[in-house]
Amino acid sequence: TKIGQHNAWGTYSYQASGGKVCYVLTVPTDKQPATLDHGDMFFFVSQRPGQQVSYEPQFIAGYNFQEGSKATVTIDKKTFSMFTRGKSAWVENAAEEPVLIAAMKTGTDMKVQAKSGRGNPTSYVFSLKGISAALASIAKCK
Image (tube, rainbow, N blue to C red; front, top):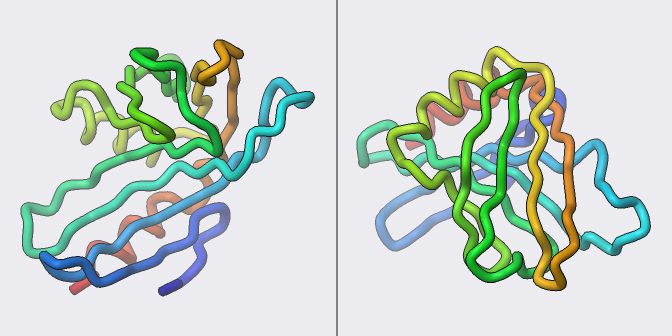
């Protein structure tokens, strides 16, 4: 269910077995190489109320990542490594999740680089406009 829109970031919620899950989501402003069919690409951050307030960033591709490959998130000069499984990627070191969220709140753009199942290097740019307001709006999610 869509809750709202904050510049580049939409806010949503759904019912899961453990309660309501709220998340913010955006799509890339740029996809490279332009010649590839990337499918639907998303970067989202979920929050599960009732659990400790923690945000879980996740990158979802329209294709399977190369098995065992890593995705890299870069904001300003900070980089974060993500492990991949299927079409999804998560922050490799959970302790870095709050650091990534903090960087997202202060940055303007975020670049994600990954490798497709066919071995093609890919890169995406996501706008960070509205991420702070979007996260603030799901902090009240019950």
